[in-house]
Length: 374
Ligand SMILES: *Cc1c(COP(=O)(O)O)cnc(C)c1O
Image (tube, rainbow, N blue to C red; front, top):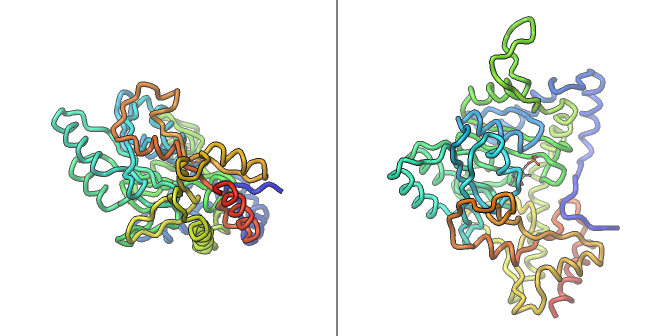
């Protein structure tokens, strides 16, 4: 049986909630489970937050950017090392991305580079219309510092927390609770899933109601169908929300388990030539995926060959995200950095990290790896 990177992991509580949704016949992109899911996430993340449940994390980012005021011809600054869904919505709005490198100490957006570039852009009167830092592989960005910068330069801050629900920062902020808005994803490979879904989380009550309005085709209040704005069909289905409610009951348990998986890899594979993704001082990552780099000069084998050999044993692995400024579609885009992300992409690998990975499966992966490195 193939071992996957990150599989959906149901708790057993979801089916009952889905049955409830069936028996109430709320088989629609609205209903009590959608409302309850929004409330549960808002409660989990802290006080003064509002949620809009949407069909994907990508949809949540699209609406967050739109509501923040991004439009045609604008510039948006974003981490280069991320998944396409964390960048494409900039293009949906006719805006242009400018890509930024990571800090090697955290593998999250390099705040010093951002600050330098904000100062420069400010003096040249070309500040971006939004900044999107990405929480990578389960580690939250430094929310407080980024909020300070965003406030200083008066730029909306939208944090991509698609990979980090359950993570905590060094000043006890929860990933997903920061910025003008944060976005979450409940895609099948994420730490909890609704099969597919997303959430826009915001401290602005009017942003949340605007997101609900835009995600249900922008229907004005009228007995007939009336529209004064262009909308989208982006609302989360009540059935999916029922799954999400069941998953939220075990979120902290899932985080605990993923961290355990990381720890076992770390203990077994901390040898010269292997460097694990650092956990910034005082931070609590979810370790959504265990990410590490392989130095071929020390280990005698490169990342691609490791992946190939694992695959021969029916073990799935992946390179780290290919930076967006290296993607064919974003050729010629502006990029600020020292190539930290480029070198991570070249040497980095994600290992199977699901919360349902068994000890035996993990031992098998570890022993194959150790054999390759000898
Ligand atoms: C998964 C992911 C998204 C997109 O979420 P979907 O729900 O798949 O649309 C966006 N950004 C990052 C960093 C992600 O990992």
